[in-house]
Image (spheres, rainbow, N blue to C red):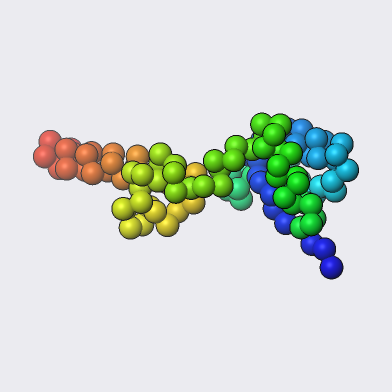
Amino acid sequence: MSQFITVTSFLLIQDAYMAKSLLESEGINVFLKDELSTQVNPHYSNTFDGVKLQVIDSEAERALQLLIDAGYVKSSNFDNSSSAINIFTQKLPLINKLPLDMQLPAFITFILLVILIPTLLIVGI
């Protein structure tokens, strides 16, 4: 029995619709998971990793290749080890456990706290 699997996700619903129409024009059945949640409140899109573009498992490889060829997905998105963010965060024990899109904000927050807290204590504010 076939099941839908997530090929990629989009933070903006309009990007998901464009990718969906591309795949449907190629005869691939597409389901957009969390589509309605994003329409109701677009600000929560990042909370649940955006709109997930799902296809039947037997068509996933072809769908992914079409999305890469059309420029909707970069093939480097699937290799997190070469990410510039990962170079800075891979040795920080708590930050490297976060999803890749949350590592940079967490890293910046960590650095600011390391600089600001001692400065505020020295100044006496």
